[in-house]
Length: 282
Ligand code: C2E
Ligand code: MG
Ligand code: MG
Ligand code: MG
Image (cartoon, rainbow, N blue to C red):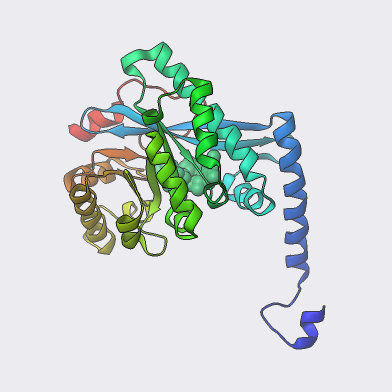
């Protein structure tokens, strides 16, 4: 209302914004209750190694089974949890679930178990003193060896500041792998590779979408595989939806692929060799 009188056309308080603010506040309160009443789940998406077809790793992705709203997308509630700080508690719960599950697969599947589980962490978690200590405690508690865990963060989360980089070095010292998520979409991508310890580049889906055409994204995807090779990093291509994309990525030198073509995130992933790969090889 006040903004309206200053004539500011951008910040005018519209009913739509009001609804959204109210909606976010409601959602924020519900996240607290959802944590306490066990409405969150963790699902796992395979990261397939080519040409073997082996599931080399899985990415843990959180799901909220809301009793009334149904499945709420993490894209909708993670930003809310980041703003109200509950991401710290939710993130620790996700980390514990994923490490516990990964330790279980190692115990029951032996050599068929994936090499690691990858867990997404938010800027807010990285910026906390003691995050690495939390990770160390969860590893000890679940009996998971540190190299069997990777933490995924966006470039933007790392960019935000000093403690994030301290945390990354502490995690690295534990033996935990560091993955840069959605690589190439944040700011200062290449500069980060000079300054922070990184093991895995996750090349964003936006570069994969048009990979079958001779366009800009294909040139960039090719350059990124060179960068990762030169720096001795693993490269994962995200969001692979078709056989043609998988083939094109393989031709460029990508050997770790993730996307609906190989499998959606599910509660109980199948660790048999990917049959999708057989089609790719033919
Ligand atoms: P992300 O970490 O980049 O995860 C990849 C997202 O792409 C996931 O969406 C996954 O389901 C989706 N995806 C995978 N393959 C394909 C594909 O072939 N095509 C398409 N169209 N999409 C694909 P999801 O699970 O909805 O998660 C969205 C984002 O929410 C994640 O992006 C991540 O940034 C965040 N997120 C999810 N789980 C967590 C979590 O446990 N903690 C934190 N901090 N963030 C999370
Ligand atoms: Mg991720
Ligand atoms: Mg990603
Ligand atoms: Mg993403």
